[in-house]
Length: 507
Image (cartoon, rainbow, N blue to C red; front, side, top):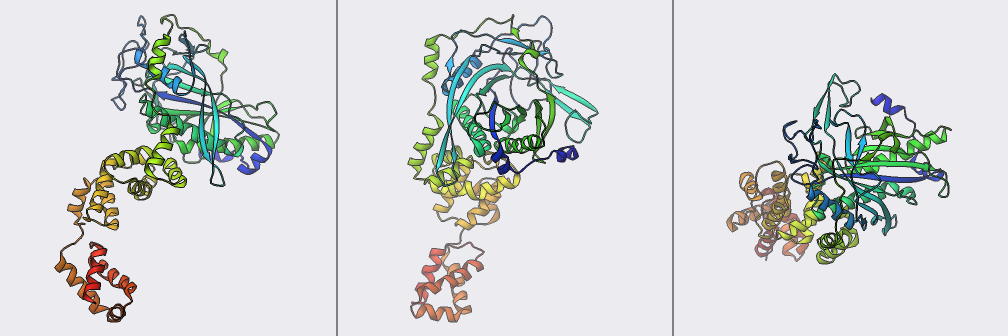
């Protein structure tokens, strides 16, 4: 597979942007966190044994009839309202017909020309090169309801894909889980910022959906997946080029990288006088490249027709307005409020947002830490650990409550900042709560005057020249003696107390 990936010629990203204008379209699939599936009563819990959460309806057995999940409709309406969409007074489901092994009915119940929410918009912010923030408007074509497919596991090959596999296993647990597909209108005019705008949009959606409480939006578990459409044209007034659709990109970083790669690959194809093929493509995290999937179907290929087993959905205007009243504070307004409450500079806030740490810091502050200390721990020690482990910050292995406990240990002078790093390291390594790590590793600061006094005496005796300077009034020379004491005490001393003792002893 990697040999095949390396054959695609790419051009330099900046060069591609000199000659071509990228146009994007993003389709984001959101798995709703309803307790049961879209059209049956089976559980939607993630991680169960394969094929244990199925019934005649989600297995598509003859004679079984679907029933719409009311909670899923409510979530769809709230998502539509949060994206400034119009909510349909009347809409219905359709059958999207295609054969795929993990779709037992051979059709997917979806919405075709009558989505529940349409014509919306949102704004995303992208850092400019000069430190300012640029705002981009993204128009929403539609948000429609459908059911998820099952999951294929290809066994025996090197890549985990069907090519080269010995056999495939099918798990229908996910089949029928409620999905909302949010489709943007073409995103134009972003130029070189196109990959960043796409990332910012998916990030904003994730924050919004989490705030709405409609999905756990865990990209690594597939509950938020992005299909990224990219096309190039010679100029902003030229017709759209042929698009490719990179399927199921499942991290924010990958959304940006996949779009960047497709721009450089398509530019090379066009530079060589070729034509871009309309097709789906697979993103490869390891090589940072996409490879061809299947040629892309058009709507006609799916032979859509209205779903005969389901009645239309007609949400009353009163219900829609009741749901509008439940919408949370918009993410952008929340950021402005939190920034003011926390006293963060624009740069500090931007770092917090790009690290995905807003919720974590808010929860850490709620648990009793100061905003600056919460920011410090999440963006240094814990962020470094998450990067090394290749996981999102929230999955690093420490909770906001525990981070607040670490800071409380610092505030109580039980540990100093240096020792606190070791406490965090211990919690991340699964050694228990911050207090347990301090106990097990023997990290508590020594505040016993006699022990500190002995260490100070030893440092003075070992550095007579430094001691003489301090006696002569050069107080800043105390730093060298403090360092010697801290080294002797393995960092487990209160530096302020050590300084006091040194100055007292040397008059």
